[in-house]
Length: 187
Image (cartoon, rainbow, N blue to C red; front, side):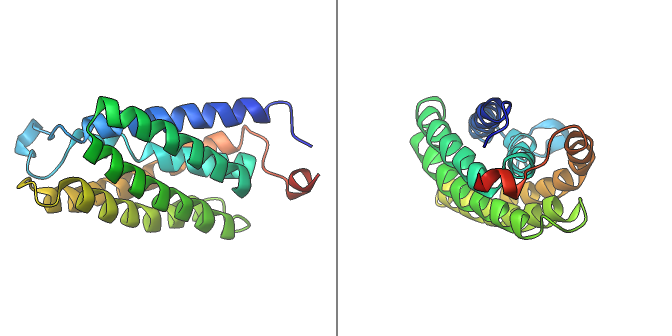
């Protein structure tokens, strides 16, 4: 038995996930030039971490199985759009990193679901951000002559900061939405 709002919640999660990945894939091609940081940071570093917030909210609201569906749908749409609007190499790197990291994030979050409200999004974000960063930057930029190793290190640090920062909106939003119920998922 699904709540009436679950199809809307699913569609919204897929849309936001896809839009965020697409924006990040376009913005990662643009070094962050303010303050002379072009060798250390790209604009994509500030966009992509929203996917972890979407994933965690989906998991809290829809449960693990439906969150995986959000991940697969977001993956398919974002990779197709990124191949056209970014580059095929970015799309491949992004898709590989996204799928592995988001599935890891959803699994870690689900295993910690019953713990303190802040632990699932924090722990899953720390672990999955590391995997995402390693896969994406090595596939997207290795052998290009760009300072991708620098970008990867700083990108991961930005992701960690944003995972911590997103605990505030996460807490506010979960207090205002119905939580996943294992009973409802079995029905």
